[in-house]
Image (cartoon, rainbow, N blue to C red; front, side, top):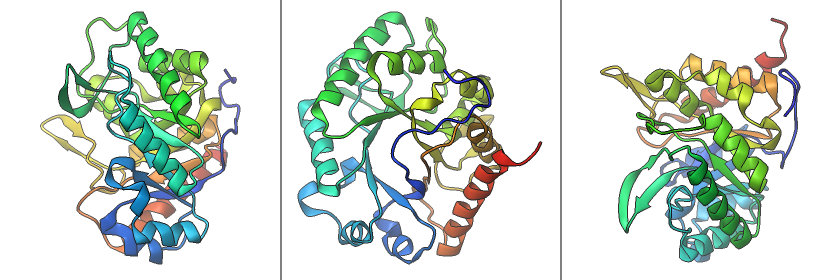
Length: 281
């Protein structure tokens, strides 16, 4: 792993982007300064892409399919049908990569309804390594996995999240989608140092970064993607950029959609936070 402070560059250069949502289609088409897009794979049909995505692809904007239901963190192998859908999305969009979550989402046919943290044990690592390799074999483009937000941790964890991800990367070569808002959530809710995680993660395998907002309620931080990113999240983006040069940084906004101007301001705040990493301390 690189020495602290060393800048690394890897993956496809994406720039600064935004998560495409049907409710934001015209806003994104009008906005300047959007370099790439991410679309929730479960929300589209590869054979009948939304017109807005076709328009934006025709302008040359890369689009990354982002899965939320593959479930590589479970004991069961990933569903061939779900993998086929991700592959078809990537091919229809001519995507440079596909992203998913390192999460537990179902067991025994029962859906959790949430992206839950995986038990970070050696045995779990063995199973998840096999699942990730199956997914990689089924996809036509590289795979990146995202760290998740949590409100609890498993009592028998043997590794930190960063150590678990580092070993998974070493075993599979999978890329990393680092969500700095999720790092902040885990720091707020579980007392896990976000900067310690950044120091331990193999950022030379960074594919891109997520930024999002949320709110505190009764002492719990909720990663809702419905508000402006708080300054501590952008500070973590700056910290990440002081350690590595992310190929891309993407804003997630999933409900209570703001004006075009407000979204543009969020992208500007992201660029400011990224550039702050190169300023003298």
